[in-house]
Length: 143
Image 1 (cartoon, rainbow, N blue to C red):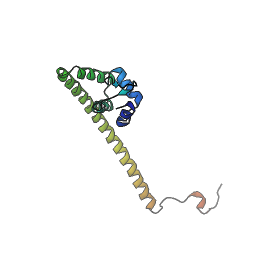
Image 2 (image 1 turned 135 degrees about the vertical axis):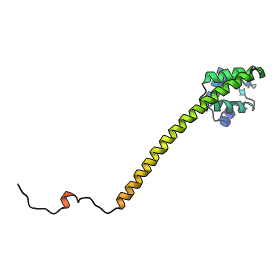
Image 3 (image 1 turned 60 degrees about the horizontal axis):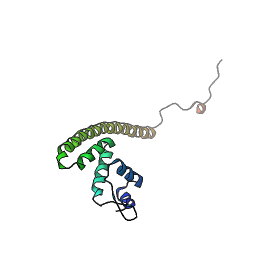
Image 4 (image 1 turned 180 degrees about the vertical axis):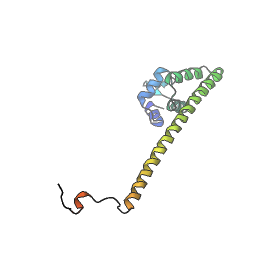
């Protein structure tokens, strides 16, 4: 699969894919006779996974460490599992913080909805306020 096809299928730019390859996050692609990268379709699963790590805030240096462990084979399974467990806890902490933020937003939105309802109710009531000064009849002026 050419890099342009891979970019379209993953949603990443060709620049990002080349960067990931250059830093070692993606394995070097085979080259065709004209020197163009020719990625194996199996790379899609790996790119999807590292995309999820990125989305959840894993730093590139940790992704690189994970990729290096992965390249070292099955013996590194426990170390990779430990990395993912630590990252999972960080993600859970982020989710809890975001849920607290959602509660604050929900409270604010409910407050604004209540303000709108009170405004509608006040607009529907008969006017009990004093009339504006200029519409009141003039009385005697005393000095």
